[in-house]
Image (cartoon, rainbow, N blue to C red):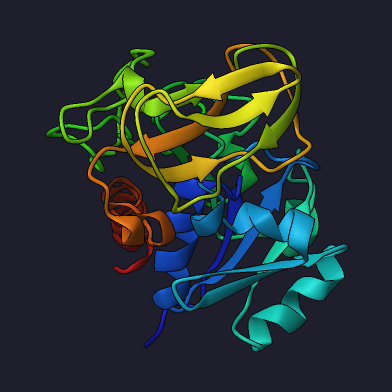
Length: 265
């Protein structure tokens, strides 16, 4: 017998999308909540783009922006993922999910608690399994990525991006100043070290390494100096820019394990 579960995911960025995609493929009814102007850089693989575009497709799964929780059931019947602008996830009071997944990845708990649903899962540091949430999923790259934690916390935030092909902090593009973000490159473009990828006001944003642009903010976003604004993949495989990452899939596997452990008995 199929598990007829409703899953509310807080956030619709890259990692949240990896989770939503897998749970949707496993025939759970998934709904996602977002902020009004998400600052997601891996936009080609993030359902958060539906906030701006009205809909977004990732690897054959489509998410659609809805204005009211009353529209959710209709989208589920069409095998679509509803996305609602609802920063505080108040729609849970109407939808009454069986599972809530906090995938905001704020490195702290911004307001998700165990009484939100029968099962509440937090991704990454900032949550305590058995206290504010039921389960925590490890999000740090390494041996424990995707591990299900039933008591305690995930590894603390190191502030250093995980290594890809031996490259860590250098692959992340950060705003050189406060101002309006104006890209001159697009996701999937190949770039050489030192090349200008975008402008923030009159300040150029250059890549430190060669590779392909895997993530980049939308044009017109207001940013502050130091904000993560893009990502260059040193592996140079353009197709990686348009598919869910290994990290997101591992985290999604941990979420699926936690759900099945609770409900598939």
